[in-house]
Amino acid sequence: MTLTPHFDYAQTLGRKARTASAQMAKAQAAGRNVTLRKLAALLRSSAQALQIDNARDLERARQAGLAAPMLDRLKLTPQAIETCAQGCEQLAAMPDVIGEIIGLRQQPSGIRVGQMRVPIGVFGMIFESRPNVTIEAASLSIKSGNACILRGGSEAIESNKALALLVQQALTESGLPTDAVQLVQVTDRELVGQLITMPDYVDLIIPRGGKSLIERISREATVPVIKHLDGNCHVYVDDPCDIEMAIRVADNAKTQKYSPCNAAESLLVARSVAPAFLPLIGRVYADKGVQMRCDPQALDLLSQLSDGCCQLATEQDWYEEYLAPIISIKLVDDVGQAIDHINRCSSHHTDVIITRDHMHAQVFLREVDSASVMVNASTRFADGFEYGLGAEIGISTDKFHARGPVGIEGLTSLKYVVLGNGEVKS
Image (tube, rainbow, N blue to C red):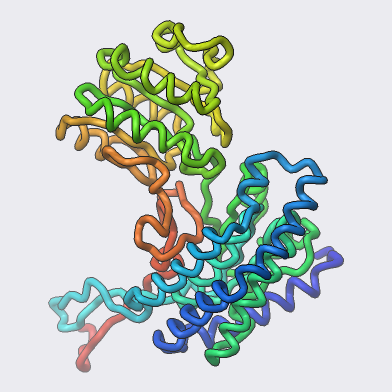
């Protein structure tokens, strides 16, 4: 084995995390909840100082030429800090799932067999840009009785260090191990290679960032990975539908914020409703500076809009995650054709139908193969906080262990428990 410059540091992080995870697994729910409430209070009282640290990161990122969507993700606004605090409080108020036994059944032999929910142990979180992920990951780790090692992007290092100190202060003040949440203090990418290949110390890796980061980790990791690669989310406008609702939802799903993975990137419209709907949403998008990449039929219906806001789509546009004011638009015959297109082209993240037809809605819910499938609601709701999970560690488009926004239960495992009264096998 070739020892790299960061080998000893990574091993130290791993050993501390493994020791802390045993203590966290034994910690009472009340103590973990106290930590979360302390963290919420610290976030609010430190909001001004956090923004100063974040401003340093933002200025350095601007000078480095970081793209606008990444800069947007890097911002730690007062609203973002308050959302983090509320997430901690929401988690603290949620029932404790650690130790619960589900599916207990009596067997003919007399034994009772069930499953107990237990912490994963230690997870590593590798993420880019968004400093709020530090709090989301830490708070979910605390609530679920795990320990975690967090490695944020170099562009957010000052913000992440400041947030991690608050987490460790909350842990210390409530009597839990400080090492239950550790932030990697170096930005060298080689450390990531160490973290994802330490199965003795790390039970799970969760990458949250760009496609290249996630592809690299999925390729090189020797521990299990929870991931999603793209956020190519669709809004399908059905016939029949409420046109006013369809405009409101399609607008919000695309323009409320361009950079998140749950922003809509593709608009599908039933051919029969397109003449009534498409020019109206086209005007909304054009007024907001959204470029529309259309199939020939959609382009024809949007021909009255000003030059430059519409262009003919390429085949690649149907698969694209833009993270920008760009949307692809395609006409389809019906809900069946919409489902076929989504299952072929989407990233299986979040897809929506806008419809008045209950049967169409049910078919869409059953047959669209995505982590979140919605009826008459914006894709922007595909988020752990909005789903009532308190926070999310990420969104999984995998089909095993966890799918969709990953909250407390996604950071736990089930083990079989058997309750007997002296039974022996004959």
